[in-house]
Image 1 (cartoon, each protein chain N blue to C red):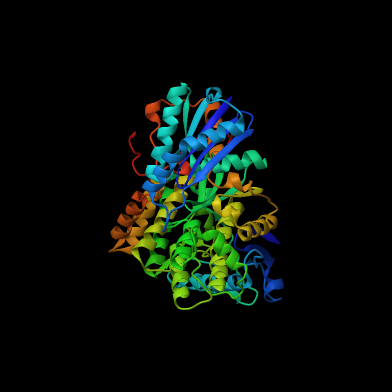
Image 2 (cartoon, helix red, strand yellow):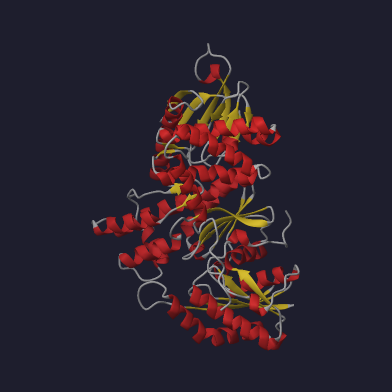
Length: 328
Length: 221
């Protein structure tokens, strides 16, 4: 069985093709890059609409399949930006009804975890999922993926992006912050906020911007911003590891590209005798393949949907989704 | 002897004589906030220092407010250890479901009263779950972990505190959640007095917020 998955929760429009044994045949995508400022939801949605055909064709070509060979359509129904979600959903519905194949709504956050479990052969990891739009610590327990910690305000990727923008770095801020951080070495104290299992990054971002305006060295500031934010992320992940006593830790999402975060999590995992996984970057970032694969899992376990049941869910929570393909 | 390896600290159960004074008897609990290699020294030191100092102070102030807590014997701010009394008893987590309804109500009321005492003293616990409470043979309930506590007299912090306790009841004691929580609130109101209702109202507000209750799912577009 071939599943075509469409991702479109935020700035990425992606089309993936995966077969029912978990082989990724294609994973094409295009990213909307704002001319200035952050993601403008309507502009991003227009970008998706304008590029859907190109990305779709590229995926089919790479997979060397015809569109008629597709047996199942999956799409990212949430969580995400409304206009982007609706554009991806419209594309998915149009294709599914034209091909007359079943359609499956996929939760974007769960897809990130599932594609990592597939490619890394992780069985039951505590997952730190960090991107520009999400920051969650996820682990499986009693039939659902539970959120063992999450941001109370902005996601960590957004913290870096907004900081970067405010101090004049190009979008997205994360990669530049990482590069500059390697040149910094003097720690400038910044607010470290862990509330129980949860995190907060807005105060950290504001204070870092303020320190920059007060004349702090940008390299030292990037270093301090990264160290502070990541220490908090690793601490919350560690709490989940200690609580669940799981023996695997996985890092995913766009911020997984950051080598320092990866290194810190690896050290923490080692201390708890846990294995550490990071999927290949093209599967950590938003992508269509993860949507296809999760669509297959959902479909294989008997879930069926009517077209009218494919509404988007901007605030669809990770812990609202039943996971029949996992036991426990 | 390592008793528990937590995320933030290791807990050791040791003979009093070995840790403090050779004339002492019985056991002590040593909470050691170990250094974490994953974070830079500056952050590591700052966190361990401030948390060790804060937690030991919270133990003392909670006791002063009338909430049973372990006696703090020694605070080592170089090695970040707190040496404290080892409380013998049973975790409330393990006994709550087994009690007879009347005894359970009384225990929950007592917990509610103690939470109110903390709040009136300007303290929030930050991690109110039944695994952090020890029921002793003489019927006292010890709060044994203030690792996430803080001095915060705001309505919001108090509301979150009670909300966390309710969440703990829901996840661990799901068969008796409602009656247990009602008894907790009854005790809380009695002890807190005027103003308790404002806190309880805030709990409801917190639970209605998007983070805990999903917003109405959107219609099909």
